[in-house]
Image (cartoon, rainbow, N blue to C red; front, side, top):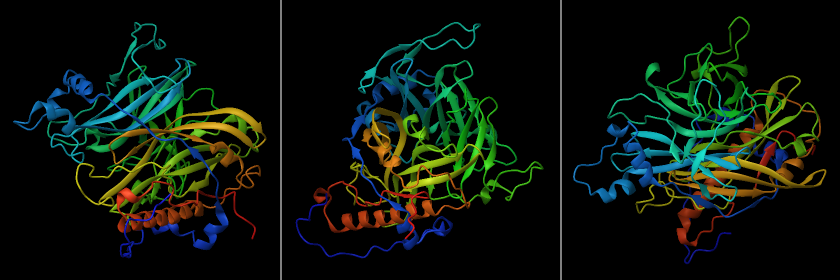
Length: 501
């Protein structure tokens, strides 16, 4: 709840430049968005900060073969090395039921100048946590994939030995923006799969999507058949089909609006579009010439997608299979600094009969009552300076504790987030499954029409209103007078929720 300021201040008009991505809004208007609006209530626990031992990580890296990349300013006192040059954020985890632990990964990066904006290289740090989020140290006895290879328990915590090429003095080397999934491999057991983007020296230093399998130390690089990769390939949203007996392929949302879906082989790394303007015909012809012709939406990236829990999925018609995640809109000059990032609840639906996908629901910005870390946390600058960032990293678990009725559940979902690119926090959301179960006409047969989504357009339109309201509050009030509740109450816009009036 927002309290009144200690003294009244003159209100200033916030000028908001229109989005350069006008196609995102082409099918939305205030009137049409009102007819799609679907509101509800969620309960959220207080955020718990997760930390990593940066001193220990610096020691591990100094003996890893990458120590030549670590250069501290000449004459700087050793006591400042860790606090000024090492950072972490982007933590995400999956629950490994066979071991009773969370497999948790964090991006750790080094800056020789001490500024988080001048990263030399990044690593992925892996830890284990129990169900109460207490760190577990020791070894993990992983299944033996090849009888010719002797068993070797995995020690934890550890730096994942993801190889990368690069030269001293270059920036942004190594894996960035890691996301983690659980894969059912062809041998019949589950293993973690870490997806990230990384500069590839073999492809003219283009930033490509990769996947790494810690249990076998296998690295693959994703390429799209029929197209040259862009200079930066990132923000692909991965998900698996729970109906498959094993995960030999992974799907990615390449673009949310219009919706472009990739199917990628987990042995070769080759991908093909199965939906969207970039999809090739049998004659290798598509509606576009290069991937630059795909107009990337302001709604993008975020967490991996999770299948809807079976307790509700089993009640839906066969033509409607749902996947849930938290995307993130990237809005520029919307009323608070140069840009704003926040999570947006996102529901993808698939018609298994036609193999078509559509956006069922997309929410406006959500902040989960989390206090935002300023972009320049070590400087005395206004809160809305440069970027204002809260990003969801991953869904750690989604448990249905008790089914209370046909559309009433007791469910808990764990979500990790990072604020200001400087920390990792975990929250627990209660009641999300109930919110989804009560979407109007959810039990109807799926109807998927049109490539562009007015659902996404409405979510972006009202996310801009959130940004405007947030910026005006910080313009007119002292930060210590502000509460950090939800500033915009329009939770979701759904294609299944349109009212008849």
